[in-house]
Amino acid sequence: MHSPPLGAPWTPHERSNTNGTSIFALVASLLGYVCFVGVGGVLGIVLGLIARNEISRSAGREKGRGLANAAIALGTVNLCLTVVGLAVGIAYLVKPKPASTAPPPATALGTIWAPPSPSSSSPHAPLRNAPVARASREAGSQVTTLGTITLADISNNLELELKKQRIAADAKRETLVLWLVVSGCRPCDGVAAALSSQISQKALAHVRLVRVDRDELQIDLEQLGIPTEKIPAFVLLDSHDRPRDFMHGGEWDADIPSNIAPILGKFAHGRYAVRRHPWHGPVREDETPL
Image (cartoon, rainbow, N blue to C red; front, side, top):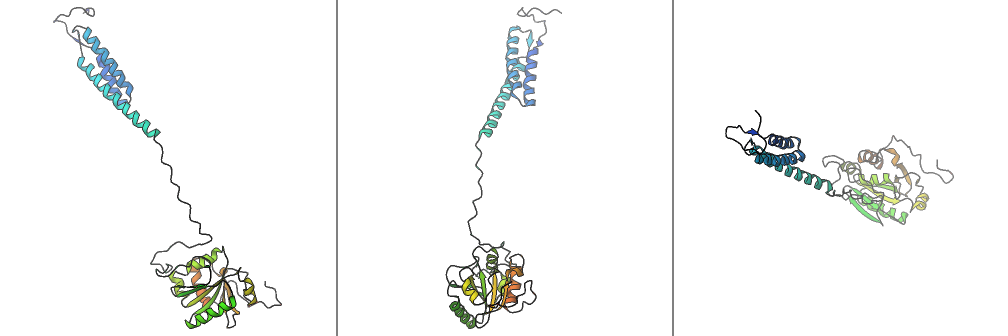
């Protein structure tokens, strides 16, 4: 049947056709949701408005105003969601990133070194009530009690200070061990850090360590016949403050309590016989040290 021209009067016996533009408008709006883009929403709105206009001009020959309205509504919601999504994305992209916080630089500790803190149940754990002797030496002359160990730092008049320390050691029934260190000596600091561990407290119980800086008192040490080439060094003295036994830090490997304490304890109590570096006694004045 031939359709009457657009705008021609519509008679009741004619059947109304669904406007094709309204269908396309609804499909475009729905595709906008499927594809998550605003193009479908804009197209749905435009086609919906065109469809409504065509339906109005058809004088009742076309229907589908509801489809056109639905396309416009869906397209509007789709467009709003797209705009909001774009705004959120842009805001996230342009949001200034927080400056990465770099860890603060480690506090300068000079040459002080300490092994990692072991658990409190370990025999290497430091005593809770014992001060920690971490530096290779303390400033000035002073005596510090480290649990079962006495640590005496002397910085001048070696001969006189040794006599004082010997008297103090005898009064407390302690074994006196001379300990030679130098500034910047990591092994020396390792020994100092190990003194407060439980294994060192047991191995060096009732030992008085007399710590001296070799560089400050080297002339005095050499006059007593004490070797000064190897550091850290440990010396047992006779009644005239002459060396009767000598050992240095090359007798153990890593400077940790489990390596230091057994060897240093045996040496202090005169029981360290088998050595990596045997000592052959003090050098005579007419000899040259090897």
